[in-house]
Image (cartoon, rainbow, N blue to C red):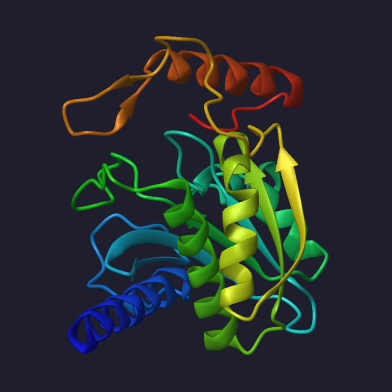
Length: 228
């Protein structure tokens, strides 16, 4: 009887420790930086998962604005590229108002990442964003208040990033959905619109054509080329 009690007691504490580890804030480490990164970008590892970040400092007393990109994109859509007009991108306008800005790109099939992570989940995504926010805050002496902007598929992490922010002792005072997917399960464009690529990631090449059409429309509206 004592052996049975000891076995179940050990199992209970092992599971409790595992849950605490799973729910705790992720660790962030600096990696060797690959070629081709833009100014302000840095490749980090959050619990071993590569994360492309971009940080621009503002007033340390104001909340940190964290931009989360949508499907198949990097956060570069919010802060631009070398040679582009920074006024065409969201980060510039937050900088004008004195807010620190963090772009946190989840691992896609983009060549900036050395490998893919097919098992990466919505909960992982939220933890990754909270971990990179915490890292930027502690590195730069910022307020622990954050505002998260979820664009397109980035809207799916509203709940998971809130939970992860609490575990990281951050105050997520606002989540803004930018034309975003609601944080509800099993929402896709239509059956068959997203398939599985050979590398284990999702594939939907038709979205790139739609995005290019949107960019062309923005070019016409603004009277100049935003993204070549």
